[in-house]
View 1: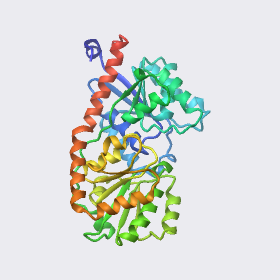
View 2: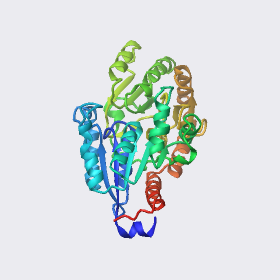
View 3: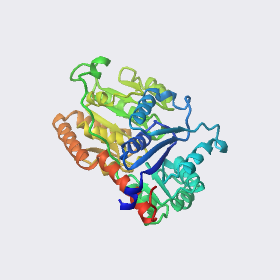
View 4: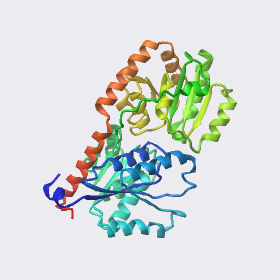
Length: 392
């Protein structure tokens, strides 16, 4: 950090997210903002789609996030928008950016990235950072020009959370390499469980094989593939139990699929939970079968819990899980391959243990939240120094 910036005052940062909690990207944005050094940074979180109704399914997690922000002395600004054309709803944000003389506005994911460049430039914020958490361009005609010309073109830097996302931004979307920077995600070491057993709570006997997954019930997470794979694995390994923790718009469809496949006694939808360490402690294998991912925090949590990971070979998952070293990778939307991988690991406890231990060692060596935060802090300071801006 430049001497002038450090001596003159704190860097004022406003972080933009669509919702306070929903998935890993939102959670990471809150964690990064909360962890910024309070002696160097004045921090605000702005939720651009704030309403009780929008967050109702995640009430416990919302309450925890608000408490964590308060404890970290991070200011909160919620924008209640009636629709995309509700321009007036943005006034509190623009007012704060201008009146507080904000130095950095940092958007997370495409909606808030667009808001960051539009509102940030409108309010004459000197530094705009856009952060993509799961590059998912699938051919939509609007996405390439929006990413290339609006988000990357009007940001000081576009952050990618995996090397694969960085490559696709440059090679497939035509964004200049100097506009993109890779900063890996990270998590804290997961806290030990307080002696509480989720297996006991759910009546799962010792020795019963349990696989599971944690994530928002959205279409791209493809929990339907996990259910199809479960039906196959259940036939090969009777007694199998599957736990899925999370809430979201696909719940009704998944409940119907569970009934259709006759999995009512096999699969438990746990809903929104705040006791992720307890859930992971109940598992033998963790699964992620998404259509696309950036660098999922859930996979890092599985690794830290010393669980072997069976995952789709998409996005940044191969950056985290080396096939045969930390888990097993399969092609997306392939329930047969997913089932085969699960059965193979269920049949080999020694291999499960070895893969899980290797996964934990890698997570702790390479994907730590404090490292992520320090890189973000250094980025903000470097961009301000490059512009010759002294913080007052």
